[in-house]
Amino acid sequence: MKETRRGSGPMLAIPLGLRRSAILIALTAPMAVIGVGVAVGGLRFALGWSKDASPPPLVGLLATTGEVGMALLWTSVAVWATWTFAGRALTTAARRIIGGWLGTPIEAAYTPLPQVTHMATGYWWNGFEYYESEREARRRATWEARKRDPQARRELRWLLGSIVTILPVAALPLAALAAGAFLAVANPWPAGVALLVLGLASAPFAWRIVLPLAPRLLGPAPARPGQRVEELEAIRADLTQTQASELERIERGLHDGPQARLVALGMSMGAAERLVETDPAAARAILAEARAASAAALDELRSLVRGINPPVLTERGLVDAVRALALDAAVPVTVRSSVPSRPERPVEAALYFAVAELLANVAKHAGATRVVIDLDYGDRMLTATVTDDGVGGAAASPGSGLSGIERRMAAFDGRVAIDSPAGGPTSVRVAVPCALS
Image 1 (cartoon, rainbow, N blue to C red):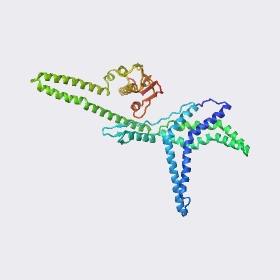
Image 2: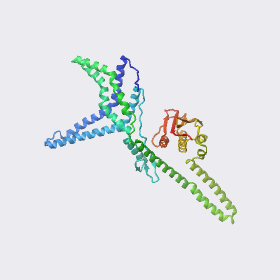
Image 3: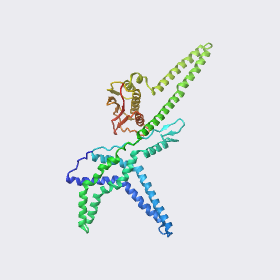
Image 4: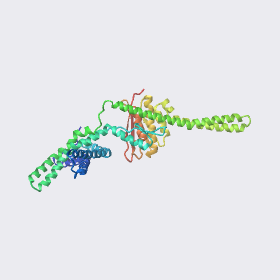
């Protein structure tokens, strides 16, 4: 890992080091300031309860122990609240800034939030428990995922560990300069000059303590035994819920649409049968209505099964199916393909529905005038890249279509990369490892 050389000259190394030390203090001090402040204030407040009392020694010891324990409890709550509400912002800033110093980005691998599904019973399932409201299900899912996320635990270790490692070392040059400036104008001034020299001499080096620590504590958590099994179990549970929701959608569609029309069609045919001898004109009118109803039922059935497995995908493959999607899109779409043959059927279907979802997102949210779809295959990886010239700002927020694509691709060890700056353009790349037939 190479460190950037900007400002490495002897005269520039000192101000650069002081600046970086100040930044490290700002990134690592909040947890210490809040924890120490609450501890000191809480201890003074708690010890004040028995300040004027003169109990027996044993009672006094118990009272002091309880007061100290109460202060420690308040401190723990303050530290937990800081980590919950500000920990991710502090560690994200640390990754961005320190990664820039190192010349290598420090990545994070957060556990994705589970899907929240509305069940037929009326309850909401978030992958952990059932809840009566969607808001509560999402809130609890966020908390449970954060609590179990190895990356979040590493962030807590960074925030706590930096208090006793990075913070005191980074603060050394600035503290020495401040103390030296104070003593230099007073007595003994030689001690002040010595501290000034110490502060200036240590400035280029003190901040470098982050070089070995930051990538280790802020980077992705190493895989632990059984982690892949847990990921696969979570993916299986998510797919089970998705399949259940899809079956419920099909059942509702059949019950409310074609089934009702077919029942009405049977009744109309019965009425026409009774009238065909006595009132042929009325029978012909009923049969005409029945023919129109049968056409409407057929259209509804086609619309219903279109989301299951379109015939063009089964018969002609992924490339032609995506081209058919492009013809029906709300904006002009260009499809470019270098895929030499058909992939495996499950992968083909997953990628097709991912592209369909991306095109639907473009039509709903992007405000685009042009879309380009690139289908490629290389290094045993099938990719589909959807690029539009819309407003940008797309993100895989919980419950969004992009989040659903990420969950479905995870079942195939696939990945989704989103590049969508504000103002556009937006490019979403879906990649799935597979072999071609």
